[in-house]
Amino acid sequence: MPFVDRMDAGRRLSGALDHLRGDDVVVLGLPRGGVVVASEVAEALGAPLDVVLVRKLGVPAQPELAAGAAGEGGVLVRNESVVRRARVSETVLADLARRARAEIDRRALLYRGGRAREPVAGRTAVVVDDGIATGATARAACQVVRAQGADRVVLAAPVCSRDTAAALSGEVDELVCLETPARFLGVGWFYANFRQVTDDEVVDLLRRAAASRAPG
Image (spheres, rainbow, N blue to C red):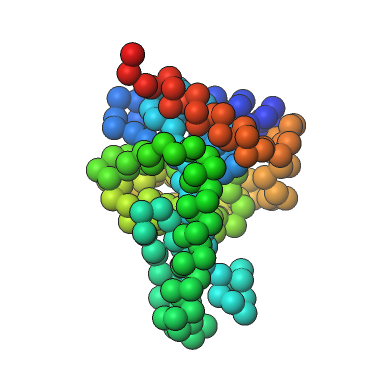
């Protein structure tokens, strides 16, 4: 079992990201479990911590098929090949995006409690999850962060399916994974303790991270 829990995984992942220390970095965790890992990375790098909030736009008849993704700041990333193949109309796409943004806004208020989103434009954005299976959400998050103006996008996770890592490596500036097993039975398989992370824990981690960087 490679990792004791998400905190252990985050500390170990930090070592593989130490070359980013001193850069203009913002660490973005994917809620909820990824935020625990990301908090350790942010602390080790002396970087701000935030969440990356993204919603895949599932084709109505095939929700697992993403016509695109929505993110904060009005960002909409379209998967044109899926839009064409599934014949998703502009009206349907706009409705999917509207509903996605409403959920993103709700979660942003929940997690940040009114604090502003950490800007990523012109910076190195390190997108962190506790593990990557298919890569669909991580891919969408990286696309959204890129669209928000990040100068470099680094995707980092303690464990990632080998096939998924190969597919993702060409889509980001840097992919950092400690374990890339060929036999991937699920993210939880690689943790001794993989308990569910609550929204309250995410809120607390973000609040403490923001307080630690507040002036004075």
